[in-house]
Image (cartoon, rainbow, N blue to C red; front, side):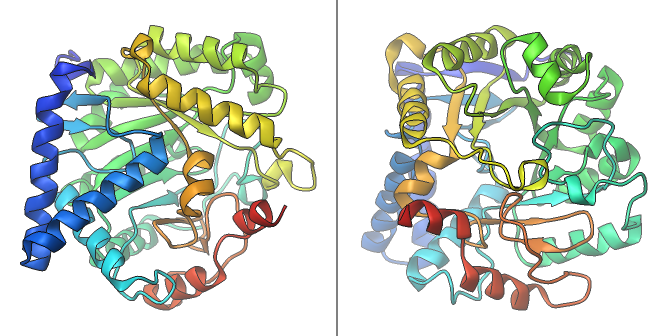
Length: 391
């Protein structure tokens, strides 16, 4: 199978036309929601400001996959019914004015652990306390959870674990069932992502894959993942996804030891060389295997990553580099998007957490109504960001 349906990075003059069409799409959806042109224009300006807070500028890069265009991994592609649905959720939140009391389903995405199993023993594993050789939930329970997400208007979902590929048959079936009304992404180490599996997931409806690569140096990455073959498997997974028409985002856990300009630049160069379309940088948190350890980045390191990501997205010399995102950048500008604000985490047991790193079950979706739990999560908020703000 060829990768002809995925373009390279669209930037410069080629991008202007598609950015203009996207604005018209948003205005049209906002007018349908408000039935008032001034309010529709206000919604467009608010979304533009959110994007500036995320990236430091307006949309300056896009990627085409099939007939859709993507400027981030967190939004459905344009144009699509999924994007329309997500925009309506955004408009509802904007007009409520208080996300902590909102009853409407406004989640932008949901990270869902579907398995307790994982063949690796990574140094930073946030799910370490739940890792087991057996899965807690069977397929009927997983389908019950998926029906809850669908009935509450979710338009974007990220399948996680454990390692979700350890439960491949169920994963493919869940993607097939979810994909008609959701953009589906995979969070994976790349372990065992063969060409046949990539092709099967694409056929089921998978949009993209976040593949973890935690260093540009092969030995350093393998050490972090406690597996001598991990780097090789990542590279194979990247090739298999791209050849099957699956969008690829490299996901980096940027540790204190890693964060220098030289390392960030070498990582970005490698990302560009592999042909991936996105690059995502995550901060280490005191969760899972990192629990009780001092892993938080310094303010200077956070600033370095933030400036690097903005430069990578906006500087002309990096026009053909992947679209980069650093969640810590927008969190410090607009508050955390977790804790039910725009996303939350459901672990392999069905328990709901503020995010994969802010652990503490707020209820189980198989035992309690969705709206009750999400209201509780929103009221608690993000403990990590409270600590950052008060530091």
